[in-house]
Length: 261
Image (cartoon, rainbow, N blue to C red; front, top):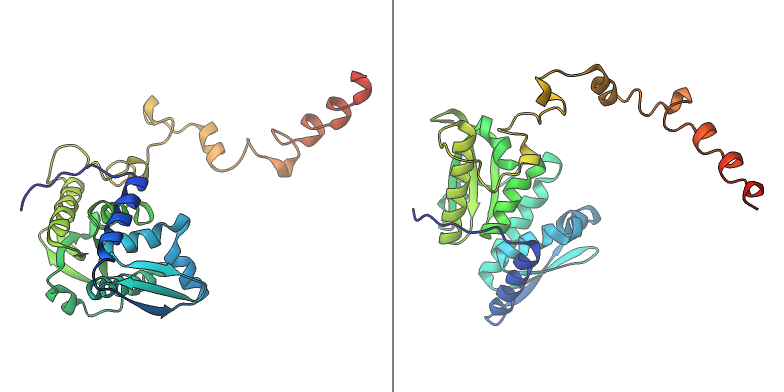
């Protein structure tokens, strides 16, 4: 497999590239179809700041016009098929839902690669709320998802299968980076942390983030424990501390115009 290294695109760069690809794609023979949607489905497909909609367009090369009760898809036959697949799986993933597709048929598609990921590395590859996997999708212009219902026997124990859908080169580069992340997590790859993995999301090698006072020898101070438990710094119910309006927001003392006139 060729070693393909690409820098991460900014959101603006990725959007501009996607728009250019759409323009080129729409000069070919295209058609439009409509998918009915509920209000909840519309909000979910658009995503925060339109990022889910952009991700689906970036992968499928179809243009999505999502309105209050439907999604209008425009593109070539291949683009529409990819868009329908991505929308179907994306909606099924809401709230940790089960993906109801024929995985055997998926594995027989020419535009699909799979990777069996050891269970301990699944969360690390996903990232916080799926952030790492979403970054890979945007970077490589692919669509990625797990079969969460079935565990398979792998080299490092029980594994879940990752599906990567996209063109040949895009699949290869996404697969290579996924393997790099998994090998790092399992301690079989060596080297530095993969650039796609965000330290803030993962907390080191997948464990919890270090406590603020661990640098002083690993001790967890009583003051810090009280702070984390919500005591000592926001004691509104006790009427004292840093939100005591009688002492710190007393308008009679600090906004008495007679003292300034």
